[in-house]
Length: 294
Image 1: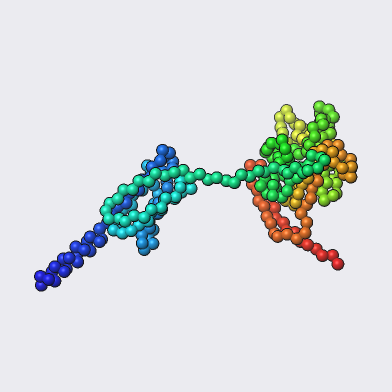
Image 2: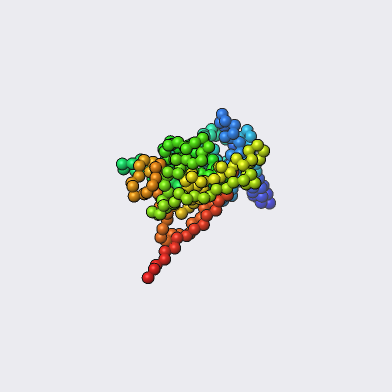
């Protein structure tokens, strides 16, 4: 009987020792308090049981009711470098870790038009550059030219091109030599604006109110101002060549440069684009189909 009593007593003591619970306290340290708060910490047991918690504003996370066992600690965040460590828990334990700021480096991106090697000053804008820029209209592509700056899209007035600043006819801007003298050619077909009759007038068509009634009509008119670039979509363009110098005589009557647009052709996969900003909402869906004419 005494032997059985000893066995039962020893077994009970062993079970109580193995079932004892411990606590694990993890503290993160850094001079910047924002780097230690809200950091995810994962504690994994050998049976792959995971306990996930987040540090408080002081960078501390405490986990209770852990048994005597091996554990792996994983500390990770987009703000700090990842920390991994294995521990063997035999008593209440406090761990401190010095965290370091994670430095995310992006590859350098140079987004500009390519300069061709020719007799005239020509800039080439390919489809890759347009995909990075995500233009709202053809006007945005001019930002890639040398010396140009980025501006917000303007859709309530005519967008005229100015490649060579040759001045205007008078102070009222009845016509502009710079934009009117720039020729647009799409797939070797010129966009003729010599007989442009897109004129609107009248105070009832005014956008502004008050003392500026009728003032907006002049801004919306493209008469004698060349091509309105708002009407040219960029989604179907493969490449653009902009000649700022003197183009060949084969391109006709122009005085202020040339914009040569080559559109996509042939069969292509279905593609779409959606753009939303403070000024517009745009959606494009297209697919190229090859037609065989027998």
